[in-house]
Length: 217
Image (cartoon, rainbow, N blue to C red; front, side):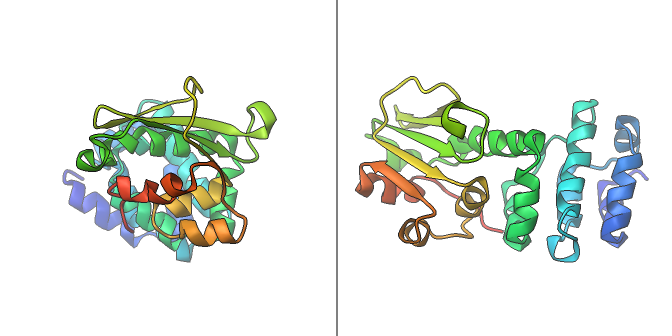
């Protein structure tokens, strides 16, 4: 099959279990020969047709292929495609993805990596601030996975090192974080229901989503 579009049609025609089995059988050479890209795979995924653990199985297969050298890394999936998957995924499906340490790290690292691409320069032009993120059930100190976002010089940079004093520290579960950054959850609602905890400047925390051009599914 020589055209990416043809590959996409073939993927779309598969049932969820068949798609999982196909990816499990593939190797990097198969991906290259059939001109399949990760966004085509993403567009073929409809979580509403998947069982609880099938979404994590699909993402695990993609990760395995990427680690083996296939050109299907999650970094190449369009933000809108990823956001659509999260939009249609159930909480149980997202929790299953986040329960896999390798997938959890891969997915969340990729989200934070893209932060600088989605920041609105005109809204952070004069901003000098640091945000610390703590995601629960992690492997770091205190049981958290941590990321630091630094706003300076009209840009946003991300690190796993907590090197600066934060203006605000935000704590939530990985599942709620995924829903939040794909605009499938409301920060005020998460805060009022105790699912999002804020330490520091509450007003600044409330303005954070407006600093980014977040993708919609």
